[in-house]
Length: 241
Image (spheres, rainbow, N blue to C red):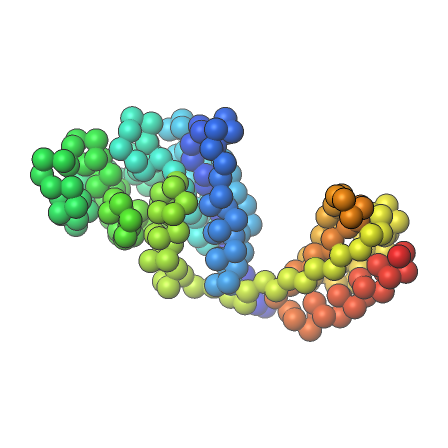
């Protein structure tokens, strides 16, 4: 059987849960991982509570091939991700000499405050992930990749680590749009889904100035099956318009 590589994203931060900050990292990572052939199968948003972060990291790292965390590795008091990850792996949080050197060169000794120096601390045994924008690194420990929450910095970090990821065949998607009503096509779509179990068939209604309708999104790693499924869906949609 085809090897399926899976991933989970752990989004850390009270500001996400409160709605003050809108997360855009999930869509970026989901798309980029799919290009490599890694399926984002789950995402969790966790508050800045050490026990919750530790429990979540330990739970998902044993359930998925890859775990990515975003947020909580800055210089302030509520940036607790690194300590929590260290505790989850039961290792000390240490000042990484390479991270220290890079930040010293970037800030200078006078500007490398104690708060900024916190960002050079990683769990013992972790390897650094470069940050071309603000120098403070992310890191990898086993199958857990700890990244910044700021999208531009996270994307920079991901570009550094992505060549080392192993994936399978990427998911291919096709979309058909119709003014048919979901209630009309529901049974036929259900029958098509049963006929093509290896194709994910999703129905997404829309409304706007052009009227109402539905978008049918089909996803699979098998292009031949996807093409067959698309033809069947197209027949159903045309019969109701």
